[in-house]
Amino acid sequence: MLILQRMATSSSFLSTPLLKASSSFPTHFLSPLKHCVSAPSTEFRALALYRNRNGVSTSSAAVATETQVSTQDDKLKETQKEKSDKLEKVVLPTNESSESLLRIRHTCAHVMAMAVQKLFPDAKVTIGPWIENGFYYDFDMEPLTDKELKRIKKEMDRIIGKNLPLIREEVSRDEAQRRITALNEPYKLEILDSIKEDPITIYHIGNEWWDLCAGPHVEYTGKINRKAVELESIAGAYWRGDEKKQMLQRIYGTAWESEDQLKAYLHFKEEAKRRDHRRLGQVLDLFSIQNDAGGGLVFWHPKGAIVRHVIEDLWKKIHIERGYDLLYTPHVAKADLWRISGHLDFYKENMYDQMNIEDELYQLRPMNCPYHILIYKRRPHSYHDFPIRVAELGTVYRYELSGSLHGLFRVRGFTQDDAHIFCLEDQIKDEIRGVLDLTEELLLQFGFSKYEVNLSTRPEKSVGDDDIWVKATSALRDALDDKGWSYQIDDGGGAFYGPKIDLKIEDALGRKWQCSTIQLDYCKEVTNKLKVNGIRGELCHGERLPKLIRNSEMLKIPLMAVVGAKEVETGTVTVRSRFGGDLGTMAIDDFVSTIKSAIESRASI
Image 1: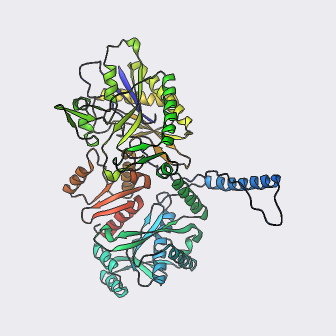
Image 2 (image 1 turned 180 degrees about the horizontal axis):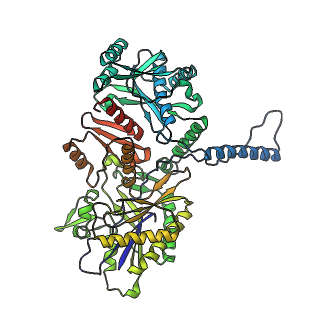
Image 3 (image 1 turned 180 degrees about the vertical axis):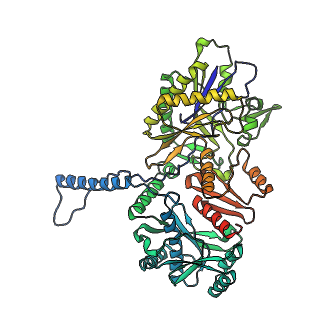
């Protein structure tokens, strides 16, 4: 006999066997995935959204007729559609896919620093790497305004237009120190002291400006398309990420290979901002998180509640039509239930502390499956009864650090779509296929027709013998093949209790989101990017964050990157250094470039 589990908006499910009913749970039974949160994929594609605009202006000399207005409005819509179609076809490159783009962005950082020092001679330079969508540079200077950004961009355009060569020079440490001292650049002296290798590498922009740098750069500033560069924002940043040190002015910019790429990026950025669910929740009066009640606890307002009601009714209708029985189960249970299920051994860091009620320990539920199995065990079953399908919109509670809470993506209490199928071994393939069909039906209801499928296999920490895992994994693979979906294998990405199928759905902007655990994918993406760049990295999880940090400190790990929902959505990591303490939040490319720079210069971070 086997049990299948499907949860998290029908976009993930697992397969693992269930022993015959007994007085205790088997140690290898199922539990739901982490709550539904999101992880953008590394592919960055801008898709245009069509907006209908009505009305035309008229002059005092003539008034447009209804037919003329309609014609002009149609022409306007047609023009907008042409522009949207053009943007829709633009695929934005990344620093990994285009070395020329990386060189452009790195050179733009230097050109910007040169422009700033020409306009503000007292400004002191620090560091200026390329990052995920552009570049930045930190300056010790008076606070800047948006108006001054325009001046800086104009000076950058002038430098680019001069087509100055980028010249690499190697000098001795003493010579570098002499030159830096002559310029009165104290931060560069500190950077020089951290460089452990000789000779020292310098890059010149013509004969007008230079900086300590290992490269790479474009050959001439004229290789940069001025119309594909834009300065975006100003932010404060502590030197070396240390709040006890000087606050610097950080200027962010974006740079691309063509003007069309820049337009597509800006369009994408604006549309993503417009669709931020936290903003929509307030503007449309759908939900809120009340600080008086506590962080990560969602309050659904009347408008949001009725939307949720309609969605839940649709979910129930579809499940009943497909042979599921609906369940409602308690929000709390004896702590022994979670010990028997194995959650206290494998999932304790995500569970709230236990409560003593009349000398017995109780616990808020982090998952629903022990309840479903209790219902299954309430009476004996004949093989004629199978398959038995049960489903619940179950509210669960997970412990999350306050710093990791983020809108609806990372919360402490939420309701998830959770289902279990009890079936015989020869029924498993058909049941999984049925779940895939149900998943597709639900996703299409909300307009999701494009998705990426992953088959996640046995992790290092798991329960159950090899034969069970082989059968369960094979059943999932056979069902996917039968469905005709292409999929990728995520080696070791399964849950401790069974292999699983994950779907990443594509939204209106072309971004891909996974409705299951996020650290399973995003942390691996960061780790893989480190390895591609020749940097050793290891993924650590399974403990609460303070313990993970303590373990890393005891092992003398030079750098730690902490990831939560906020980091996933913004494509960043929060960095902690063994030597420099908390270094703040960095874009992934910024994190990689900082490490590569330290490696090349044999410096500590």
